[in-house]
Image (cartoon, rainbow, N blue to C red; front, side, top):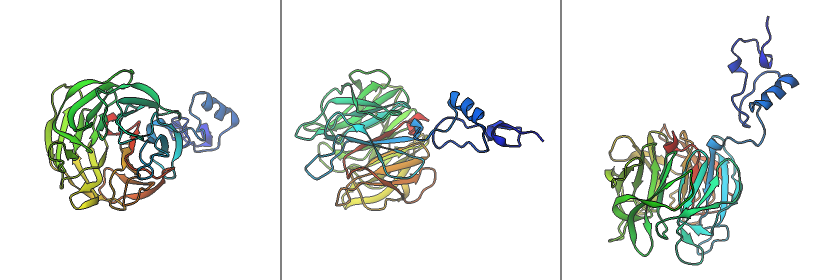
Length: 351
């Protein structure tokens, strides 16, 4: 009887050899010291604390007390595929709220936002997702604004609409791998703010928010194509007009999470199939009616953090994107926050 790597009696070494050196990688069997050292040199031995960056979710900035920003430069991170409380990642570049986010597999972007004291930001900042640390300057948006939406694929980040002294319909574009100022991409169908977005690898999809002219809540969903500089196109409608909402996605499905309706805060989640235009469908419910939360995903699991239920909260909750249903408790952020941004290195736009 033959003995193979890991002390397993098998000719299929893939059943024993780990695929990488992240802490949640399996290395079954009984290993000799020589085998462990050999695999460590190849970057294949599981290492405690070595978290897969593609599974890392980061929550950025946000209001921590009504009218005050004591932790508004804070960034937290978690491993999305597990559960547990968040850990401090570093400091954001400003005490800010209502930023937009975008990310590639390696770099996370925060853009715009409302300053702690007064006024809006045009600053774009970035972090390296795999290594905790403070945010670094990336460049500037076309103008200072808050309450804008953000989306991305592996190459480009786009920032939709927003609010300066009025609502905006402009879309800014950056190349995530190279720092620099944003350029004009195209226009949204409606001047809107306090809306939300999610992405597939080809499309950025925006939904809800407030209309600049009437200040009324919107139920429209629209999309733009990352490879095209043409204006946005109608996609469909939400089940109800909703603002102060957020979104997350797998490669195929986008989920709209909570927000503010004409009847008040909502616990509703709904979804669309991003490749085919159409109206949103019921997905399930949050643990409580909540607006102004942040959300991201690892393309399989969606993660929702913080928000305002009547009180600002630090709750993290998750869903399985492929199967409809209510949220499950995940853990807590390091501080209560609303109006925060969230991103990951494995969201639906990167699949």
